[in-house]
Amino acid sequence: MKKKIWVFLVLIVLSLSAIFAYFYISNKQKSAVQYADVPYQKNEFLMGTICTLTIYDKGKSAVLNKGMATIRHFDKEATLTEKGSVLDKINANAGIKPVKVPDDFWPLIEKAMYFSKNSDGSFDMAIGVVTNLWKIGLPGARVPSDSEIKSALPLLNYHDVILNKKKHTVYLTRKGMRLDFGGIAKGYIADQVKKTFLKNHVTSAIVSLGGNIYVIGKSHPTSGTRDWNVGIQNPNQSRGSSVGYVRESDMSIVTAGTYEQYLISHGHKYIYLMNPKTGYPYENNLVSVTIISKKSVDGDALSNAAFDKGLKKGLKYMNKKNKQNIQAIFITKDKKIYITNGLKNNFKLTNHKFKMGN
Image (tube, rainbow, N blue to C red):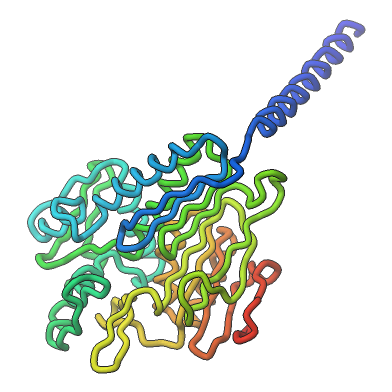
């Protein structure tokens, strides 16, 4: 009996020692992190927007170059304007044969299909046949004729995209079909930059790819206790002007809005966000949708899907994402702001010209 008690006591001592060692090592690692007096920052024009990477960890300036290299690598494969890119090859072989894609690109393909299904086509990975007609944000932007759009619509259907998970191939079953990842690629790339930073032991940083923001760690590195105050873009003002803010850490904030890219023709404004059902840009009461999520690829796709559904259906759709810790902010043309249930204790309105709708 005494032997059992002795063994038991030894086990307790060993367990307590292990716990003490864990916390000692963890605290030692935390205290070893040092932060630069002035953060390291790098800007480049990529993916049709200004990409800004900011790192607060001391001695990590070289990681900025790795982050930019990550952006260039995936942008080269996901863009439609790059001859020989993965998407270009897939589209060029529509109705001909399946195309094998690189392993690091496959997760983006799967995500695009997932959200095409999950949103019931509000986000459609096969939207390229329509965006190629409009070319909004690209040289040669124009308003296509009704007949052109009617001819394109039968080719716009994600159900006609066949994925082979085992072989990592994509096949567009009808000639003339085109994938376009403009509504999801930036989010995926932001996630890859975050991974690059974490692999290089960056603990506090901001990834900004146009309307896609990812905040890593805490906003006050010296204390390591405060979340970032992330401003929600005022859709009626230039970038940098906000209507309010949310406090987040290790989260993505993605905004899709009518102010981003558009075409003015005969006094009418056509936004870059396309309705897969009509082939025309959205015409509803929304001016922007912001998605807050752990993964930026989710936020990118959902901002487009929620915009397509409009305010009422969009709110209902996004409130169902609450269990996944995904939230949304809708701003309407009459300057009202609607938020999903999970943001009621987080979003702070700071612009008196806007009012809360719910």
